[in-house]
Length: 355
Image 1: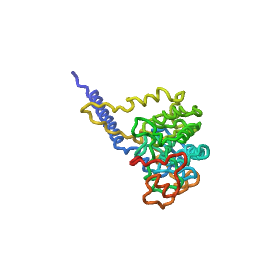
Image 2: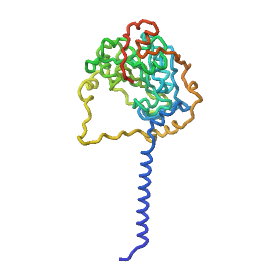
Image 3: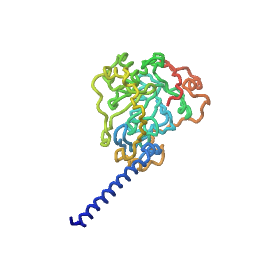
Image 4: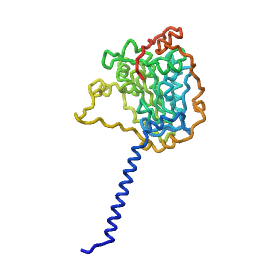
């Protein structure tokens, strides 16, 4: 057989090319694995991207441009856990929170809102806590009423929200803590047309199903989910013109008080996942910047406003620095202010360790 040198070179060249391409792919994969988690990148940003407001991606996989902060304090709200720097959101979300807080005071007599996490300045995955809240269209509202005094920074960091559940019973609302005002507050949140969903604990959803006598047309928006016994979670639709924003599927028809709710009261939602006896727990995999919409790389590295105040929605209020040293609960705060407990709403008990 005659040796064909050219064919051999072609085969050799193909083999070398394959090796080079394979090595390049391995290098690219290794580089992707070595990239820092997106939560570290977005969690390090202290100010938003200065741009027209836009939400990119899905609630649990995206980012936010042109975000604004809700003021630390307003006449009908106070923001909690200020050290997290998560009081940012799309202007549509922040405007709704402000309107909701005023309506809650004026129309149902709620003392004011204590605001939990909304979003980071540029959205994106968070260093701890939520899987969602990434595009500035989610907000947590405590079920603890706002006290009559302005909370200090330290109090906002240490006061615990109050669970609505009876700890001695499975998925049952505690009647000594829950009030009709809590029901009215949640149903008011669900009544706004831009609200897509309101997430609550399954026990709270059942309580509403069993007791709500008013208009039930918005009750289907109130969705049962794990946790959410000390706060509820408002999610709004993608604002008009947000081309890069992906809406959640529409809420099913009805009030949501049937089979979908009954499932939460079976063993299935609470069963631990089965694992093989010798199987190692899976290594946690954190989203990288490359996993998010392409626009998020621009959002992450875009210009910032000159100050937080420049990007604050409305008038920037500030909490006073003076604090009572022992005020680590709502009761202590009210006692320090020398005021009586709020009418129609029980003074909540602290829940140590709750974040």
